[in-house]
Length: 247
Image 1 (cartoon, rainbow, N blue to C red):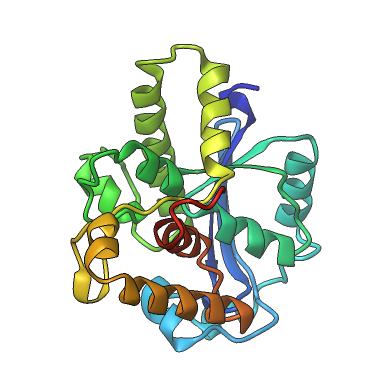
Image 2 (tube, helix red, strand yellow):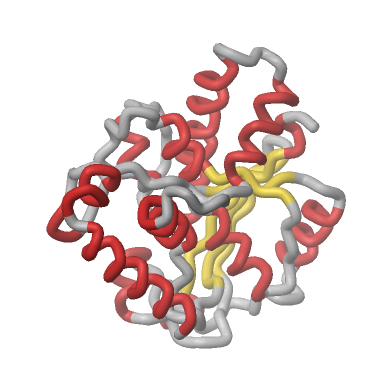
C-alpha cells in the first residue's frame, strides 16, 4: 500500500437527501485527471443547483453514469483495492454505491482534519475553508466544481500526510493510520451551529446536558426517517451523555 493506490475523487449530486444521485464526478488516479457531467435518474434540486451551478438543462443531453466509460473505469480501479480519498468520504462512497461502484477502503480528509485539530482551533472543517485556512496553493480550482474540489482535496491530503509524517516517516504506516482514523466516527470537540456555536461540547455537557439529549434524539430520529445519518454527532453526543459506556 502506497500513494500510487490513492484515488482522489469528488461527486456533485442532485441533492443531499436519501434520493440524491450523481450528476458530476471527477477523480485523479495515477497522475491522470478525469471529469464529466451525467444525466441523473432524478431531477437536480434547486438547492443543489444554487451550490453547484449544474442545472437540469446542462445534463439533459448527457449520458447516464451507469454504463458509461467512467463507470467502467472506476469499477476496475476500485475492484483491485485502490483507496478512495474524499472529503466526507462516506457521502461520496454512498453515492458511488448507488451507481453500482463499490469502494472498500476510504481515507476521509474531513475526519483527518478533526483528528489533527487536537485543541479545537478550527472554526470549520469544510474543504474550501481548510483550503484557505492552511493557505494551500491550488491552481484552476473553482469551488463546488468536482474537478476543482479534487485538486484542492489532493493538496489538503498532501498537507495532512506531511504533518503526520513528522512523527511517523514510514509511508505505509501513515496511510494505515489515515485508514484507521477514517473508519471510525469523529468525536466532535466544538459546536459550529445553534445557540452554543463556538463552545466546547464538553463544556455544554456540564451545564446543559438536556440540550445534548434533545439534539441526540433529533439526530437519531433523522437517521431513522432516512433524512440524514449524522454518525459523527450521534457518536459524540452519546459519548458525552454516557461517559462510562464502552464504545
